[in-house]
Amino acid sequence: MIEELEIKLDSFDPGERKDALLALCEMVRGGRIELAPSDTKVNIHCHTFFSYNTYGYSPSKFAWLARKAGLAVAGVVDFDVLDALEEFLEAARLLGLKGCGGLESRVYVPEFSTRVMTSPGEPGITYHMGVGFPKAKLEGDRGEFLLGLRRMAQQRNRDLMGRVNKHLLPVELDYERDVLVLTPSGNPTERHICLAYARKAKKIFGDDKALADFWSQKLGAAASDILPLAQTCPRAKRRNDKEEWSEGRDLLNTIRAKTMKRGGVGYVLPDKGSFPLMAETNQFFLSAGAIPTLTWLDGTSDGEKDIEELLEVSMSTGAAAINIIPDRNYTPGAKDEKAENLYEVVELAEKLHLPVVMGTEMNSPGQKFVDDFDSDELSPLAPVFLKGAHIVYAHSALQQQCGLGYTSEWAKKTFKNVAQKNEFFEELGCSLKVEQEERLSEFAEDVTAEEMLEKAARDP
Image (cartoon, rainbow, N blue to C red):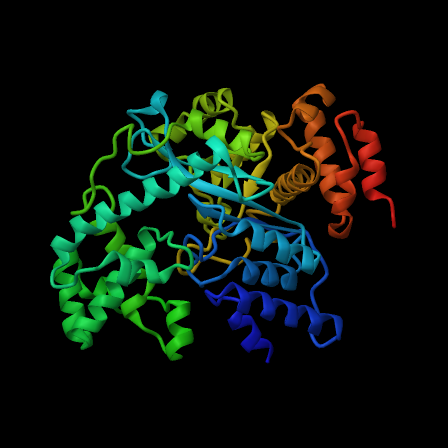
């Protein structure tokens, strides 16, 4: 019964998800399910099925699994939408989980127009985030900007699919029938399109040999590169209880690389009008109550080799945190360039007093649910990651309840410097209990940091 309820947490029907979560919570209260005590592991960068989660996780499913595993703080991030935010925060409150939510997009940085940053092969374009949004429903200019992000992304997808369709004939997609159905709210990504192509090809060719021959010819890749090494797609495994290379990681990644990324038949070099400016995106994040956050990939691109300059540019327009995906930046037991870069960027973030936002994304097969904080490589960095998560959680709770978050006017007036502000938000994030969040609604602009800490931490 527990497994059945957990599967229902991924339903596209929000009512079914809510009923399943309530039933699981009741089983916890009745002693039929034991949840792990909270530890020091965090993941505040997990995509949900509102953009693309390789395991099909809904916001409720991720909240449930995060609480079940004992994560200290958990957070969702989706591409170009806040569709997961309200559901995730509600689920987190039900479960007693410290939670937060954000948005990721791609932006244009004029100062780096000739340098590649975090978007491979795309000079001037970088992934960018806002974290700790207090609410999803935005009005006025903020609502229009958010809607514009979705529209811009979907138009890019449609144009891309049209170009790729011509190359992959007879495997041709219809955006409404084949792609939109893979999402609960009409926000597919490139990864959804790759999955749709894989499924359409399987339907047309059926036979494994004919299917392999088709992909080998269209992708210019040897069948051995996409067949034997293919890993099971978890959703496919759940449907058929067997491995299916036709939806495996190697095939999906090859489709994306060969048809949608630079050098691929569907790729068109974006110009500065294809994406919003980083500066205007930061202003949107700030006006919506989120913390603008620069993303960091691995430090190997031309732009990221100039990370101090990139941070200076982003911070000048409002960026106040940095996002890192640790798992992709080290090989256990091996010292290499990426691992050195990881330590260097964390050291730089500490020097600049930038909270570090981190997680595993889970938008590609094989990615972990949570990083291995006990590994030799990550254990020295774990306190920095935990501190960043507590800062973002405290901001999220304060911004929701009284508008006095990390980037608020109250914070600017209250703290002498960023280091002092970080110390306060970390302490509040550590001590605040989920069931005490509503107490924060009593605070106004004249509250002191000391008063806030004392009242928020007081037992009922």
